Image (cartoon, rainbow, N blue to C red; front, side, top):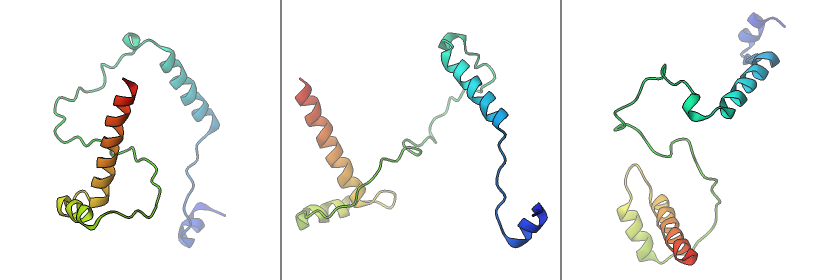
Length: 110
């Protein structure tokens, strides 16, 4: 089937990646990974001085697991009260539990 006919039928075009380009890219990345950092030329990369618009954790999302958890109504009400438009109360509860976990993990290592 010709590409024009595919487009007319509403099918998506597949991006063609040649094996040679993928293999050469992998070889280049492997060679770069083997180099010591002081030998890597980064002069063509512009230096970023203003990080004020940077957002942390945008690309990393931990795997979530759904569960039913019974909490006291006043605890839930407080977290809902503390929630904002950007961050919901469940996210705040998750963060509080993670902080608690890390604090106790550090104590256990002492």
